[in-house]
Image: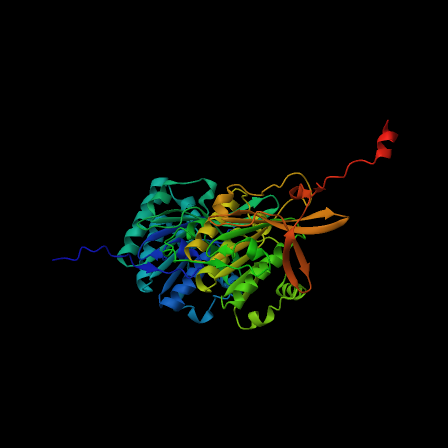
Length: 499
């Protein structure tokens, strides 16, 4: 009898952070792949990062064959500043060989023979062919290029050697030879206004699933780092939803009474309100209450550095330093400059999946919106994040700033609220008796009873407190309230004066 169980194809991990996640484990052994991108897109760094990882971590042998006029001394000199570069691997584990002259003098047949001979001589397990465009320029016909690539696949496949071909594509779109390889990866740099964003796109990857769509990447001192889209990661086999019971107290006197004990565990709450209404301080109270109960909590901030946050909390009687020192209160700070939405998504997933966090406060939504080059993505991004938190039993709270402090309308900055939150708390300032006074109310609390009143919110050095409802006042939600107390009957003299 034979074993009919499907066998997983043997993989070649790339060592490029995020890429193996996109490719579900890496490249398939003894297959041929093509990496396409315009000059400056990162192809050379990508290929060499793969080579050094294959040689240093997997004990493989690499043959890097160039068809370009660039000298290897210049190539190695440019790579030496990157952290993955290891000169001890040269020239035994990694061999650089120029085939420019062979191609120029003998054409594709001479190049094919050189590849066969050198791959066998070096016992290469990974071959990189850098500069296919040079071969296309000397090829007598398109059919000759197809024949060359087919022969390359046969030879390297028989030798068990994985092949990566680098090409610019010459700006001519998808060509016949691109359909012959087992996988086609594209690197692009696109402009959105004054902002440049690098993206990876896997057009095909034969014989294996992979994450669809465009994924952002950076070129750093450590090489290329790819950030798979949160929407694709959150859908890839989340664990069963944990059995959640009870509520998470917010830790603000009076507010938990309004919420009948707090928000449901594993739910998501929006703190909606203008600047200065108390959203950040309320979120910090939510985290501090969790830390008091022995839960691990995380503050994912864009506007306040950890030092400033600790000082701000101390101003209302919250001493967060003991929680931070013992590791129960984690802080991530990302200045709201040119962040990448996908990079933020990878960092948030890491917090949720590996840190054991039970409460997460994301402060705030506007920074996510600014990080997105495609605004339509933000709602889908949030929906995926909320789903991930639900599946893993993480209670999420995030702040959303309204566009105006006063006015007749309260505009939600996003569509599809039901997808991105079960609960909404609204905070606002109003003018009463020539003073600005804060209030909080519950706009939405799914599957739970709550107090619908508008109650005053006090922020004092001793802490935050929700007090009683406002009497004889209406139109509070507009920020332009008016009193409703009835006046007594007019004085008789006033009636006579009015005649």
